[in-house]
Length: 397
Image 1: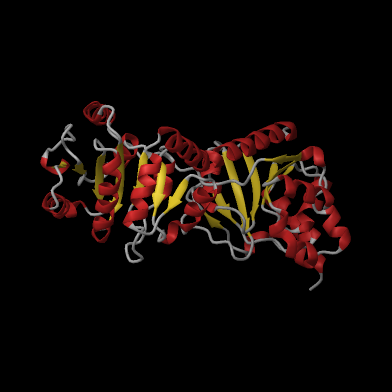
Image 2: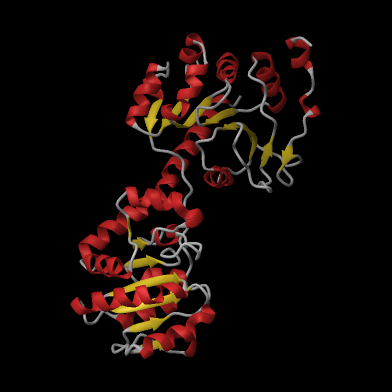
């Protein structure tokens, strides 16, 4: 079968996976978005959910995994072959007002069709290092023309901007924004409870060990003992991963001579309390707001699974964690590289980290860096949305 015959085939022969009611909903703007491997899918979906009245026709590169259920405004299509006629036929079918290339792994023919059809194309998460193999696979001409005519290019670094310019991109169209990242929403809390507890704690220094596994209790106690030698008024809020572990925590700390109060029994962090056992469900957001220093529990032992440090980062905590983050290793790496998280392996190291962060300026500096990491994706998403709206308005009849 020749290319012209292939291109003439209706695209409906290949089934599209639809998110709910998107097929029948009235959209004011159609978008084609092709997603490469360098893009965080949750961040992308969250961004699309902010675009009201928009239908997103989504294609993905090999190796990209989508969730089983998509929002109703997103429709997944098979990726068109990298042939001019096939991409042209695909665009005629979906009739997009704007095209998005998420990452550099998109069909070079797509850029050519967009230029010829005067469809605004926006590239984001553009990292030349991730496209090295792709670039080598293209002929010199296709490599030089792949990025020409883009309406906007959002790249991840200054170095990438320079490389993309050498690959043919218009420097005036390039913005260095960093990558689109998932934005971590702050955990909720009861504001009235927070106010009452803050008044009780008053000016006391406080740190929280959140979501700890019982196997970490001794290390947390060792750290609190070490830090309390230098800060005798120091309060530890210890929140177990399982609320049912509260009574066991209470007994263990009391047996070692600490003054302990238990939240589930109505106890409060009075001035003489040294350890407050926060054994209630769904109050992690409350403890992160009260304590400027946070140890992310279930991370000192490999079998505990690891808690999510992004929850603490979103609330501006100075974060300490063990080495075992499980599925949260990527966000832990980003926080650590930004100077927003310290990794420890023992109770003694944990105590030393707490002592160091009792200096308010150090904790505040780390907390600010953590917040920047957790919220950076919002600025990138906002800029992409601005470009979409700007070029969609220009393209409108």
